[in-house]
Length: 121
Image 1 (cartoon, rainbow, N blue to C red):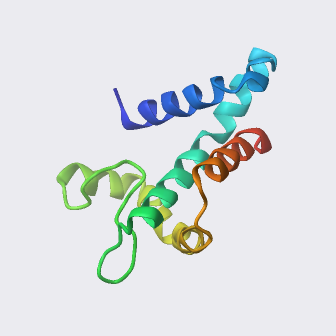
Image 2: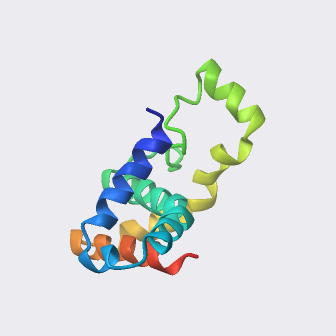
Image 3: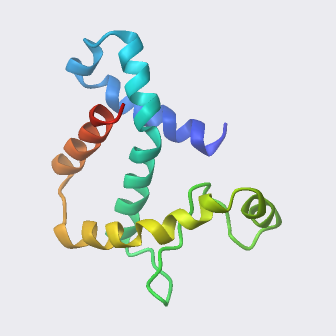
């Protein structure tokens, strides 16, 4: 199973545990999930990095969208084809730092994910 498929599955499982979400038309559910999945994944990566201090010595986060070791041959080949996947962490670093400063609790994080799911579309 690919990483993206696994992430998508987890976001769907989260959404389907919300009774009100399950009452929405199934086509709308699919559209909302499909439209928001990448935003939710990026938010979760930033949150994880800010919570656990996953930073390099130059204070840049070390995660990447595909969860690949950036020094591997596969990673280098993908970087050449899809450089934007590896530039995302540079674009989200400020957001990641702000997440660390506001110290969201688990309920606030769940609410933020819900807002991401229903506000995209």
